[in-house]
Length: 99
Image 1 (cartoon, rainbow, N blue to C red):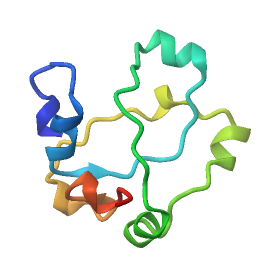
Image 2 (cartoon, helix red, strand yellow):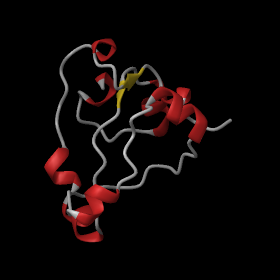
Image 3 (cartoon, rainbow, N blue to C red):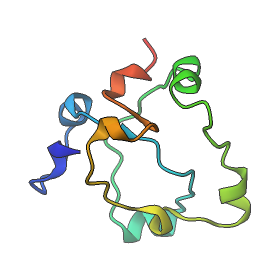
Image 4 (spheres, one colour):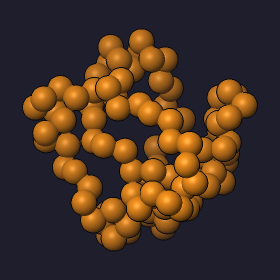
């Protein structure tokens, strides 16, 4: 996301205006990883399940990640290509947020 390139802590407004949201593999994030990675909760956003399923029909339910302990640290990657070339992406977050 271009809004994160300057290393500032993102705001909700920055993220809502960011272009190019990618569906990453389902992972877990326990309290230890949360603390070690210094992840902060920025906001609670309610997603519309119908919109989410329409945009990402192959979304995982998370059972495999939970059973096999696949953590967020294993899947963090930077995608440098244009957002529109990855089929597992949407342009704006509002496309899947509940009204």
